[in-house]
Length: 317
Image (tube, rainbow, N blue to C red; front, side, top):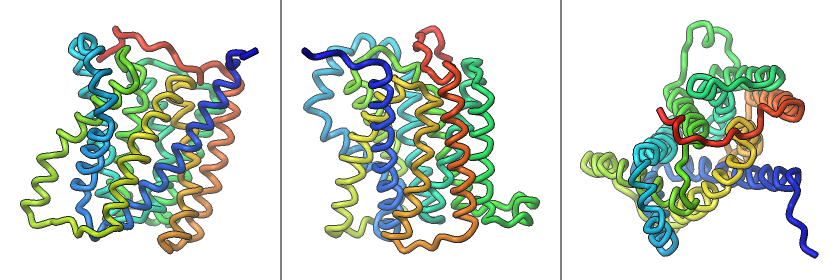
């Protein structure tokens, strides 16, 4: 006799989905760095979302038709989520990868939970358990160690490498998207993903044209075709469906906290695949990030604050 999954099993399944998401997004950063000389950053993002939207059309068109009355009613939310989580996040990520390493990109993503806590408090007045706040703070220190390359003089002078600063902006954009996911209208997941992907593609189109007009071209090759296939099919369609479903189950803070596992595995993959060096400050940052993840997990277990709050339509800004 088939038994419905328990809450603990559904939560474990959600975290397993988030673990897979971290692997898929680690690959996205590695590819963004690997093709930086062959594909302009905004053109890469535009092609990613355009291809993902086209691949999704057989499923998204019927779903969008069914949900159209709700989509029309709450289009400002879908527009906001598409601009922040699709267009802005990825444009900043790919641009930052032209000026910094994939290792730094993934390690800086560990700052996402801190920004999620801030946005949850600013917009929804959520309060988080102390252990979780301390864990996020510890991970944030780890990010600072990486951004300032372990040099206290750089930290005192507030000297950021331009690429790292852009990557930090991408982390802020993703944290905002994660916090605002609770405002997602009550439409089918395929409708939500299809509409927000389309918003991202349309928003990036004029900027991609600007790159082309400035003389920046794609150097087409089998590797570039493979890169576009990966970022559209796996880093976009598969990862976003998994992340949105998991965040609906465990909440924005828990989802953001779980994806901080991405930097550690991603940094190792970058060293193995791209040959990027791992310095002592990377290892120190990793240790602090892992310690922050552990403290955050303790906070989630000890308090129901990590559980998702039901989205309310009246919460929209």
